[in-house]
Image 1 (cartoon, rainbow, N blue to C red):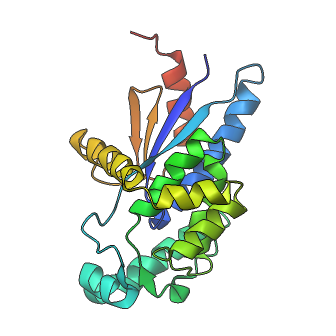
Image 2: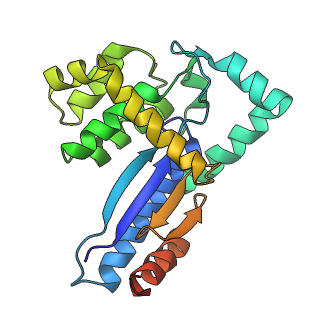
Length: 216
């Protein structure tokens, strides 16, 4: 059986984007170690860093000031340095709007059913952290999702369906009920968890351990 990897993440979490790159590196190492094994099945799960964020989002400047105070610059300086190590040129200065991410998460759920989840997750990360795109705007979400391979008509209908957001919200709540408080959070084969954007070697070790542990 293929190894399953659930990644609990938010598209406005820079450490989650770093975690994605490190997971990709770990998957490449896993493929080299296990050339005959099926590719692991990666599923992205929703988590809102700011579940109380208004639907229209808020000023990024105001958000950073509220959350970090005078330490905001130092926090993002450290993230930027780690980002460069994994090839991610974060452009925090381009971000002007801190969004509510529930609509984005609902699109990631749709993408899972259409086999385009990785492409949609990547598009959302890149748009926000490289281009400072406002993810509160419906037109931006439609353009990103269709650019990643989803059908425009389906995407527009999905964004207009309140049930789609309810499903994403319910998954977010389940993650919190399981005790997840920070992301990225990786779950291997449904039973071995790793919290944080750890180096690829650490993720590979967890992958091997999960695969070697007998199913109960």
